[in-house]
Image (tube, rainbow, N blue to C red; front, side, top):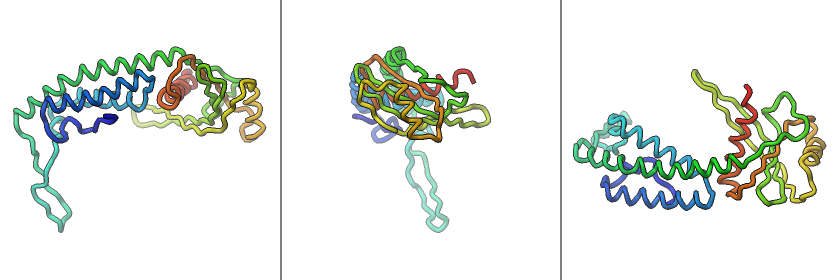
Length: 237
């Protein structure tokens, strides 16, 4: 099972043995992905389910809100539906609590495996500025080189900052520009050629991101590289 439904806990049959079977089938896929060094989107999904279970365990009110509902009355003229809770049984509550108590430590163990993959790749990832770095670094180029591979893949990146009342969020958008397969093309040469092709950026911020760990490019190297570059650029804000 490659995907665990968001409402897997309350969807369908609420039975400990059945939910255990569903969860373990999903976690088998998770472990396989981590062993193949494929981190995303599995890692994000796992974090979501873990946090959700913690919330459900600690807040019974939210647990009730997760319960499925059935229509008890429909007023089609006013386009309103009245719902009643299907589950008001203490036995069902105890079953759900038992499922949560089993699932939380099991998922946490798999999360630790995912964190280990993340840390291994992060520790062996290096970001190196190419040429002179301008003052404005929120837009430019990122060059990606994998372990033991000669090609360099170039992306144009742009970092955006979103704010709400309490926090600032940073996101990064990338667009693939080219792929250089020649091992004789240095990062400096590639940057010089980019400046010629795209003169609207006469001195773009450019970074070479390399890894010495063999891992899945799209599922691991790329997402970790993007997160690492955002942290690298915004570290001294």
